[in-house]
Amino acid sequence: MTPSTTDHDPDRDHRPDAGSAANNAARLVAVDTFFSTEQPSAAFGFGAASVGALTLAHVRVRLADRHGREAEGWGAIFLSHPWAFPGSDVAPAEKDRRMRGALEATGQAMAASGAYGHPLDHFLAAEPTLDGLDMPRLAALVAISPLDAAIHDAYGRLHGISAYAALGPDHVGWDLSRVLGPAFAGRYLPEFLRADPIPVLPIAHTVGSADPLTSAERTGAYPSLDEWIASDGVRAFKVKLKGQDLAWDVARLCRVHDVASEVSGQAESIRLFADLNEQGPSLAYIDALLDGLNAQSPAAFAALDALEQPAARDLGADAVDLHSVSARVPVVLDEGLTSLAAIDRAVALGWNGIALKTCKTHSLMLLALAKASALGLHVSVQDLTNPGIALLHSAGLAARLPVTEPLESNQRQYFPETSAPEAARYPAIYSVRGGVIPTGELVGPGLGYGDPGSIPRTIFTT
Image (cartoon, rainbow, N blue to C red; front, side, top):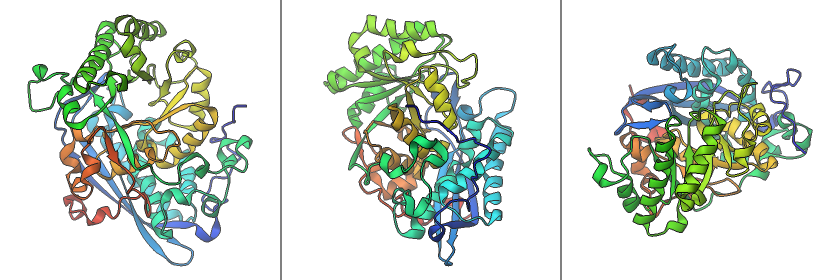
C-alpha cells in the first residue's frame, strides 16, 4: 500500500504549539546570521552550470524551554544559486540577495512568533511560507536550511542529547501520520534511523565535467582523478554528465571506470553514480546513454549504481515517464525533491530513489527518509559541496541511514580552504583515507559538531 502524503493539507494544524510534547517544547529566542564569500580552488562544472564564488551562510540560534533553560545551536550551508535558482532572468547577485533575505526574514518571523514546539513543528509552520518567496522552492529550502539545522542542533543541546535521539514521542509529541498519512499511525522517525552512527562512512568522489581524469590531462594545480584515487583511496564516483552530447557522456563514464579500475587495482569494487543534473533532453537520450554504456563497457554498466536527476525537476503534466529506465537502474530524485508530495509524483512517473541533501532542510529530509523507506526506494545522502560544519551535518545524517551508501563529499576538492577551521578540529573527517571518513564521533549533543562559535572564524567577530 502506498502511504498517502498530506504535507499540504490545508485543514491540518502545523502551528508549533499544536501537538508538540509540551514539557520539552522550545521557542526561538534569538537568531543571528553570518555571511562570507568563498572562492573555489578549481572550476566545478555540472549539467549546464558551473560554480564560482558562493555565499556561505552560518546561523546561530538560541532556544528556550518553558522552564527558562536556554541553549545555542548552529547550522551552515552554501547559498548555491547556480544549482537551486537557475535561469538568466535574475542576475546572480540578486539571486544571492534574495536567498540571504529569505533566511533572515524566516528567522526573524520564527523568533517573533514566540511559539513553542519541536524543531519539526517550527519547520512545518514555516514551510507554507516558502511558496510565497520570490524564488524557486528549492532555493527557498536551501536558504532556510542552516536555520532549520541550527534549531535541531540547539534543541538537542537544550536536552543534552543527540538531535537524532530527540525524534521520538517524548519530544515530538505526534506520530508520522500527522504529515505522512494514516499508514504511518504509531510510527516515529527513530524507526527509520540507526540509533548510533556507523564508525566509518564510504565517500563518493565527485568527477566534475571539467575535471582532468589523468595527470597527463592536468594543466594546473588541481589534482587529476588518478591522483585523487591514489591519495584518498576512493572507490565510488559521482560523475557529472552533460546531457547534450551522448558520445561524450558514454565515454566519460567508461573512462572514469577504466581509470579507477587501473589505479585502484580493484575493478570489482568500483561504483559509479551518473548525474545528468536535469540535462537529459528526452527519454530516448536516457535510454541511449544506458545502451551505449552497456555496449561499450559492460563492466562500467555493471558498476552503475544509480542515475541521478536525468530529467527536469518540474514533475508536472509534461514530465517524462521513466519506468523503462528505472527497471534497469535506480533513478534518483534530487533537484525535484522539494516536498513530500513530490515523492508521490516521482514514483508515479517511475523514479525509484531519492537523494537526501541537508541543504533542503534537516526536517524535510528526515520526513522524506521515512516516506521513501516505507516505499522501498533507493536512498542516499548527496552533497552541495558542503564545507565546514555543513559537512559534519551531512555526514552525521548519512551515517545514520539504515542502509549505508557512499556519501558524496567534494568540499576537499573545490573549497578546501573554506573548511580549514573545522578541519583543524576534525582532521580525519576532512581528509579521506582508504575511501572512508570516521563518523562515530558525531554523536551529540545536538547535531554532534561541538561549538562552532569557538572555532576562530573572522565572520563571527566582525
